[in-house]
Image 1 (tube, rainbow, N blue to C red):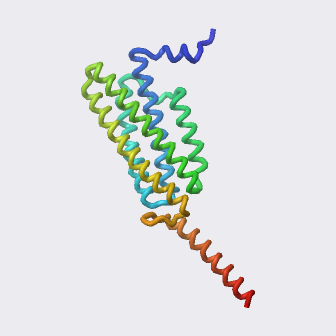
Image 2: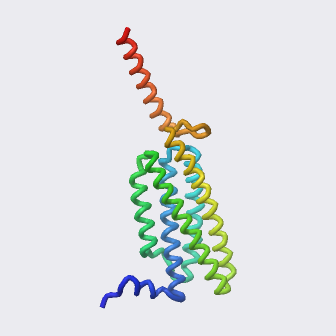
Image 3: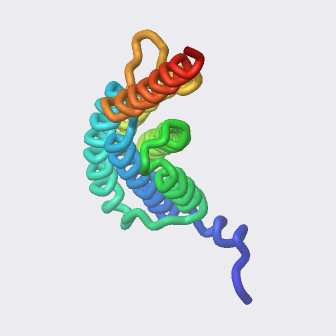
Amino acid sequence: MAETQEERHEMHTGQDFIKHEFDEAIAVQQSIVRGASSLAQVHPMPDSKRQLQTAARESEQWLKRLQKAGSKFGATGEKEEVASAIQELANTTLQKAREGEPSEVYEAQAVVINALRKQQDSAGSVVRIATALKDRELAAEGREMQRAAKRTADSLAKNLTEMAVWIATEGQTPGTSPSRSGATRSRGRSSSNGRASTSRGSSRT
């Protein structure tokens, strides 16, 4: 008889559970790396581009560290329900954001931030497990990852609120500036409006 979803979950105990936790963390981290890297290429705000480039580099380093730590338990990044759902959502939002449309980029960045928050929780679990196993090195690694994930998530979240205002005010918010391409589109619209106004004025004359 085929196993139910609940029965498959119950199989994750002991060493198998630790492997499952690392598999999930590795898979989610892969989504973070891909998301930050992709958004850094199309983000309309220069400051955000730089933050995402930094996040991508740091996340790549953490992916390698997770893979190394997880290999001790046979973890390779195998995806189950949670990691698969995060990856699917990330892929969907990144696909929509690939042209750099601000509101789509905004949604994709929010997904990356949520994945980072998930990593904070996963790192906390690793710390508790490592402490119970008296593995001081793994516990220290987990605490460092938890801090790094929080730092990156907080930075991107702060930027996201700035982007929300930038989108709502159509790039006119003091202290923020669109990328060169965004500025070019804005100038193009302004020039068109100017020509239209001149034409209307000439017609009235």
